Image 1 (cartoon, rainbow, N blue to C red):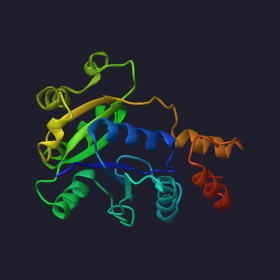
Image 2: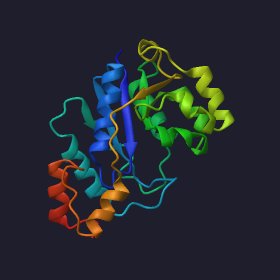
Image 3: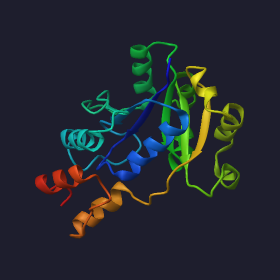
Image 4: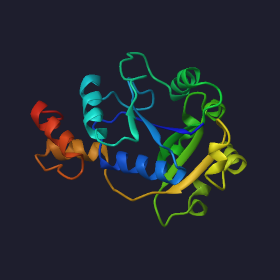
Length: 216
């Protein structure tokens, strides 16, 4: 069975950096379906600035036209804190024990993975694909990873994409992706300052933000 990718985030707002990361990882791992999963109430971050309905609709607009991306609403309607380990458990129940699941994360998020709720259980539920900046191979940043997480990386690191397709969970893949220095917080700051966010978000998202006067 083909692997399914999962990209979660507050998407407050979703931007081209999110989409490019998902596209690069999916292409590298030959993944034909990526679940784009807006979170509900994030456990590790401040509350989102716009309601779930707006983040959901912006995500829907952003991924329209890409047959690889599928909107996943597992978390976005929940009011309790959402933990990725619980969401992966729900997806595993839905998709069965044999389907390879690949959680997409950025390099910064991965280096803080040992602070996630029940983080070691993540490897029982999915593989983890880590996107890092080109020109910065793992050897240049492994010394910044907590010892417990480094142990997992060294033990689970995959050398070829087929390692992930051949098992439902448990491996770590490191992949250089297109570098795009874009952040949701930076976009919000630009909107508040009256500056343009064109070409940082999809045009449909840009229009939605303007129409609904978000982040002002």
